[in-house]
View (cartoon, rainbow, N blue to C red):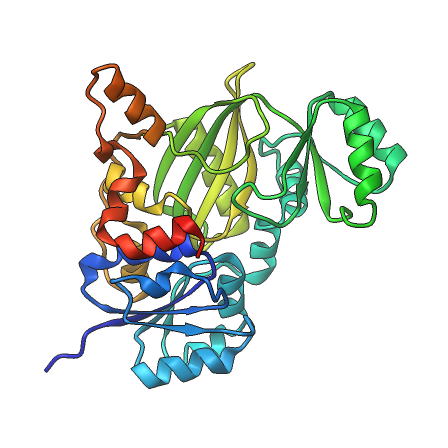
Length: 356
């Protein structure tokens, strides 16, 4: 009897875990998950063979133990810190299983840190917003005044829009600084650019883009920096030219989710950050464009030749849009939302949404 292929995913986030599990269905393989998140909703997924908990993300021996127990073929981290950890221990881990692609640690650390990346982009003439560190109240006032309001304060490490704050004047900004002095030393100050959100999702092979999708969301004017449900998938030569230049310089190896903003004033695009992991909309990019990034990554890591077609043009609607369209007698459908894929793994998705 031929042994089924087995993959060990390592990651924290519930949505990422469930998204990658959904995308790996065509492989018909045994998928295990190692997570430090005791509430990871993937524990209820019908696509998961078994879940293990990881108390210390740097615990290489725990990874090796699971790999040996189940004769794992591929170790594939799906979150940032987990990817970095596998790369740090690549020499030891690759003795027990194949490991998926990951960027060299020094370049990876630049990519996933907003301040380091902004300096890198600026030094290499790659478009990004103005930026400044937050060192003192007086210095912050000078830099915010020079940028012009509104401005943003962001943690230099973070994802999914968490802890990003917008300030429309100095009174708001100074109050926030005084209330949080000593806790925002590792934050970055940037101007708020009115425009649409662009995300370019890629797999790179030592700096060369193997495949990509580009998705764009409506113009943002407010204070919500979380992921969008309204997505348009299309191609854009300017976006991919900018991303290509950056990835070559970073010698990026593996997956990345690059967030950008299209400035409404001149239609220019600027790089905001790199997420060195799979992305919240990984299932949407698969369903709408036909590119299954987790599946492609598995095959590339195992030295196989995946079929990679050009991404199709597609669109995803929010549930609110569909309901509104239905009330107006128009043709939008539930199938146009991200929730259509949730029906394939209902219990796990309900647990995810309810955060149980």
